[in-house]
Every structure is written in structure tokens, then in C-alpha cells.
Image 1 (cartoon, rainbow, N blue to C red):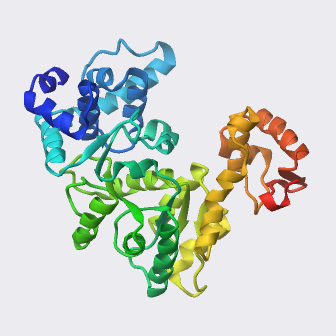
Image 2 (image 1 turned 45 degrees about the horizontal axis):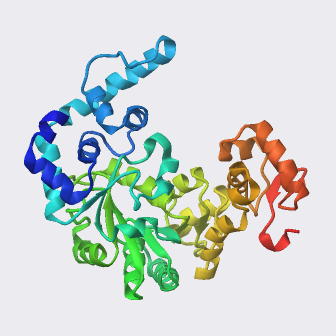
Image 3 (image 1 turned 120 degrees about the horizontal axis):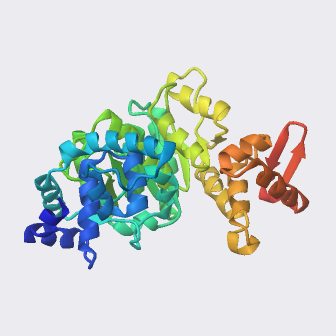
Length: 397
């Protein structure tokens, strides 16, 4: 497949338009992966991580298992790879990859890949579920601008929800924050419009290709974002949004934001999916409270009660969320990046057991106990019978 693509002058020319540079084979391979694999495909991610995008593509379309390790691990990997090949092969059509590249070039989209200056390292926290590449229309540099706050909420938003969303997003964007959301009706649209309305910047993650405005009612809004902000997609141009792709898109919104705020959400709102990703990634999570009688705010109240979300009612309180990231000592200052991971995994509002902190941080319980002892001596954490708690910066010695 790669030989056929690289032998075609039109494909190479389109690849150079969407990503200038000498590594044309890598860019074409990554573009091909966005075509053949669904967003967040962990088998594809692991294969690319192990072999690189070009060799992984060859392995994906090859029937041999010579690259697999022996024993039980090899049998498990063989099953996963066989299932992956069954998913990928029907889409491994060179003309489809050519069309994706040509369509991106036609609409002025860029292909951003790991290693680029504009690649957001925050997405690498997704591990094998990280995107292999991103298609972007607009200002690609916004992907690495800071601070970035993800704001999501109900599509069927109330007047209260849209008002609060616009107030928060407008204040934050006016102060220089990049507002990240999903381009949908309701809260998403309100925060995008508010950011643009104050001359700020915003990023819209789509579940389909960046050449397809969805929802159609937001065509003009998405066109404006593509000029003044950035419209981003994991699937290539021409891809239609589906329910699964919306859910997969949510993990990117959560990962890119240095904090995530849910403005309004019902008990089973899709916004809770984004919040769950943010919590899993250790990102600060905020929720806007609403009337206790409002079903539209039941999801936010659930986040406050069950997900250890912070209650936020103003832009200043949202800024405190990502300010938590700045409170901890940097790895350069401490000499141990695990200290930062540990502090990010802890809460200033509730006490956690060593086992829970280990689960959240990805460190071993023994390592957690060792670090907690040092941080306790330095006045960064406190201990009680109910567990460990991170102290706010104002209470540290």
C-alpha cells in the first residue's frame, strides 16, 4: 500500500501541502492510519508505538506473525492483531487515502503529527489511545498555546446554562485562555461564541472530518472558528460523525484542556463522559452548580458528589483549577517528576487512601508511601485517620 501511495506524484504533492517537510513517507503513513483505524484504536496505537507508522502499516496489512513475541503474550497479541487486521483491511484502499489528502489540501487543512512543534504533548497522556495524527483547519499553534480550558455541557441547554457558559468563557478568553469544546449545540456553541465575541481564541474538536460542518446549524460558527481559532478532527476529511466518534472525540477534549469544566449536564449527559476522561487523566475538574430542582444540572451535582469535582461559579474559580498545576514544584525543582504526578492525583477537598492515590497516579503503593512521607515533612500534604489530603498553597509552610 505504501509503495503504491508514494509512487503517485499527486499523493506526494498533496502530502507536502498538508504537512511540509522531508518525511513524506511518515506523513502519508499517518494519514493512512487515520483512514483505516477508528479513533482511539489501542491495537493500532501499540503497533505504531512499537514499529513506527510506516512499518506498522505494513505489519497491519501482512498476514505473518513473525513480529510477535513467543508464549502466552504472543498468543494474546496474535489475537488482538488478527482482530485489528479484520477491522483495518476493508479500509486499506489507497484511493481512499489519496482522497483524504486531496480533500484536506482543498480546504487548507494541515496534518499535525507527533514530533511537530504544534503537536500537543498533553494528548500523549492517552497512551495507546492517543491519536496518530490530527487534521486541523485554522491556527495550528493554538494546540500548544496555554492556558487551555475545556468547557462542555448539555446540547439541550437552559437559558441559565448558556448564560453562565458565555460569562465564564468570555471572561477566560478575554484574559488569554484558549477555550476548547466540541462544536455542538447548547453549551459548546455558547462557549465558542463567547470566546470569539471578546476577540479570544477557541478550538472545536469534531467527530467527523474538518471539511464537514456538524451540526449543520453551526456551519457559519465553525467557519469562523476555522479562521480565528482552530477546527480539529482525528478522522480524515469526508468522514461522517457517528455516536462512537463523538465519544472518542471527548477524550481529546479532556486531554487537551489543562482543566475541564462542565457547565450544565443531565444525569446521563455525554458531558459526563468527557468529565470521566478528565478525571482518569488527572486533569482538574470543575462543575457549575444549578438549581437542585433542575434535571439539566443533575449531572453537575453528580460530578461534585461522586467525581471530586470543584464547584466553580466564576472565571477566577476556573483559573484556580489550572492554578493547581502551577502550585506544585516542577520536576526540575524537585529532581523527581513522580512528586508532581502524586500531587496532581491528590485532592484538596477530600482525603484519599494510599491505594487510591496509587491508582490515580499510576505509581506503586510503596513509592506513594515514600513520597507522601517526604511531602508531609515539607508541609505539602496532611494525614488523618481518613487518609491523605493535598494542602492548598495558602496553607503550606
